[in-house]
Length: 536
Image (cartoon, rainbow, N blue to C red; front, side, top):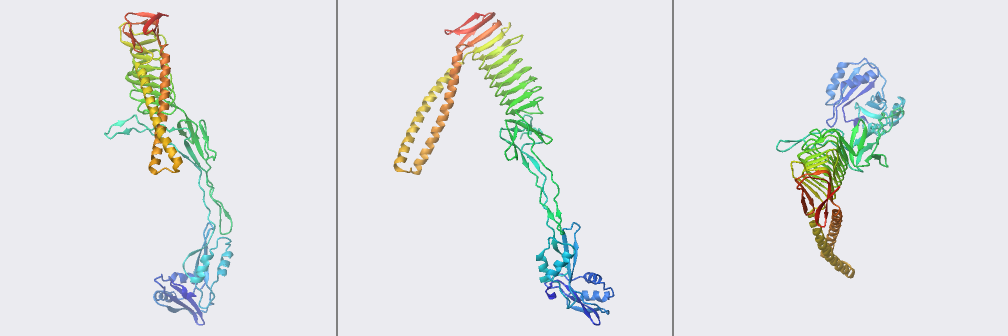
């Protein structure tokens, strides 16, 4: 059995005249055995009276050929094969190194090795395949893991994965030409209703193990994590996702998420860049010239708006006013209230406009325009409303040209005519395509299956019909809106509670009235194709 060992090994032999040592060389280029192993063996068996010089010489010669020498004259009992077992400090591993028996002595069996391990307290994790492999191959002097406890599977802390930028750092864009664009800054986490704001990854508690003595070994404690919800947010049914309940923006403070559909800013300048927000915007300070604020909802600005662009899907409130610098553009789907509007390049309002004064600006409003307050002044520029312009003072004593228009713009009537023509053409095209579809449908019913080219024709024709239907719906809606404006045109009027001065040009559709002298406390209306004034 010993001869199966491919590594270099040695064996002692107890003879009547003393103790002999035989050193065997390795096979297949394996490593030769070291003399230190024999020294350890003898110390282990408490054999101390031996010839160390003779033993060293034997190991040198035995590296290449079997060599036998006498190392002791004393008589010794033959020692059987034994294992040297070392247990790790954590009681999870036993490392074994086996030593050959004296010649003719007993070798260890599988059961004897198992008994050795049980004797040192091992109850769990004996590696039977390793034991059997040793008994078969006799790999002496080779440390091997012969028993191993059940490994603990360590867990993992729970954590929240945020689906938005948690460390916004507004950085200006550098253009290809080297210039710096301070308008495009990523400083707001925009979200839509239904967007996932955060994902919870629950903690993994791991799985316990067992040491060699069979004692339970617990995994390390892990941290618990949870989603923290608040206003405008909800947690999904599975408890793993935090969802936005509204359009708006999201920020992270500590481990808490705040979701809002109102964006609050101090000023709009180089520190913020342009703002394009899906919700309401509230600005405590000013909006500097050249910057843009767009919002799908309402916009409220406490400070001054300089030559900036302000666009809202809803209402706009300018608490201090607009100093347009001939650059400002104001657009609102709803109403606009402002202390004043001065030198605005273009103002487009879907609702009504209330302002303390409107100076040298181009203004187009679907609803009424009312210049309120102490001054109630409209001077210079071009101011138009479909239904009403009302002010205390129109123009000034210097005769500054001031255009005031009410009623439907002549271009609106032309647009109505164009839409009617388009609707007629679209309706005719739809009828022709429907005829083609009827022919193909009948052929399909009679023949059972259309050839590939006819199938393609059928599908393309159906797509065209769908597109025409969509365009018909859009143009019909626009036509109804324009007709509603025409109906309002009959009640259009201009009211002045103070004075209207020379230089004012009053426009009712295609009719124009020039104020030739100061006139006050009256309203202007269009009756039977003429513009007339009546005292209030």
